[in-house]
Image 1 (cartoon, rainbow, N blue to C red):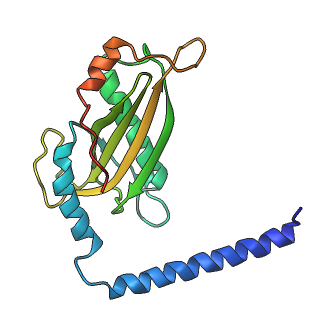
Image 2: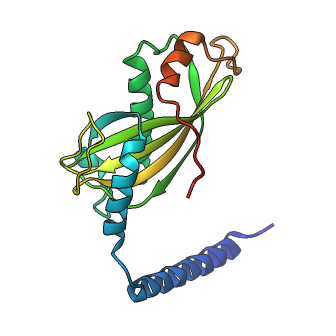
Length: 197
């Protein structure tokens, strides 16, 4: 069993090691040739925006920014949850069909900050018996469009998320087959699964 002093030494050592790794990455990034990450992300956004079947728009708020001047990572998870549930609720799939978030994850590419509009592209990559897996593209930029997949240089793919809902029995909380009414709505976002690059 470790004493608090031992833990402090381990934390200080690991923080120093992390800082050294981050400094090495910064140096190696400066030495790399090619366009900066924002340019690469803009190209990725143009290539991927059209893959999403539906968009929900959110607007950032002042308190979404963290001490570093960009959106806190937890805000992206709120955006995903809001977008998925608003899409369902606007199509009659609200509390009538209980569901839990079973898994989520996020890959960040470009930081966003207040004030800006954020478009969340939704598509479903797996529709199972009781679960549904969403691929969510989070696009940022003042002139992003919610109604089409038009390319726009000011819109970048800021992050990409995975979001899994499991439909459950209201009484037991156990997984149950997705009701046909809900399945019809979900199928409008379903795409053939592609290999991740």
